[in-house]
Length: 353
Image (cartoon, rainbow, N blue to C red; front, top):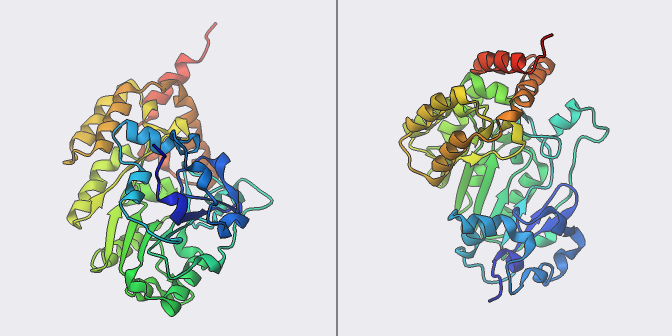
């Protein structure tokens, strides 16, 4: 039976390096030059009798019972032409999240001293057609991306946008661009799905997602939670850095009647949950147990904490936190419960005569 995925014939994902693929889950070494977009068979080599190697993320998710991106797309019943565009064509971002890097944030690139900090590849308007039913924007920070605003304005001017669904991964730190408010454009589309990328509420977020202003983010979340055509979901990246406030984040979402859809961090490995020290396992598990949610993601979070098979990376974890605190004049270390563990680990690794 041929591997079936709607993205092969009906979707294109644009990356900052000028490459394109059928979706965001395909292996990086599969990506092709942007020149293939005019070829209707651009990704037909993925139609194989056996699941293709380039699609391992979806294959592995389905094997473990997690709903894959392929399964999500297949339910959209795409029928003709390019019906979905995934725009992640720049690393332009206003934040420096602790677990991120220069590929997704030009602020990270500047901090690391890269000679070229901003990555961007233009999206040809020839792919923005009346066949479109889904537009997905991520980044970087999509609400800072000029192409995002140009594409929305083009659609409003040329098409019936009441049939188009918009989707975002955004930090919601801003909602305007050159005096244009995003709500004025969103109101003209069928619906808007917003995954708000916040990892904690209040003080911790300004250190985990460096550059965040919680007051502004909270204001935007509360504003868009009231919009009838906007479905807002809180989407934290769960790591060793923010597990300590995860219950508070769920409580915040509950107060606003918002769903939480966590993303479990696997890399960099020294910030993943399985570096959890034995002495803090019970504390972390207790926090997760306070969350009244039985999602598969929370079950996996607990398993990673319980297995904590990468404790040997803890010194790397501590060094990373302290180094960025010093460089950015931040105080994340002071908020985290690692001081006693760090002292113990340093002593264990110190040789006495």
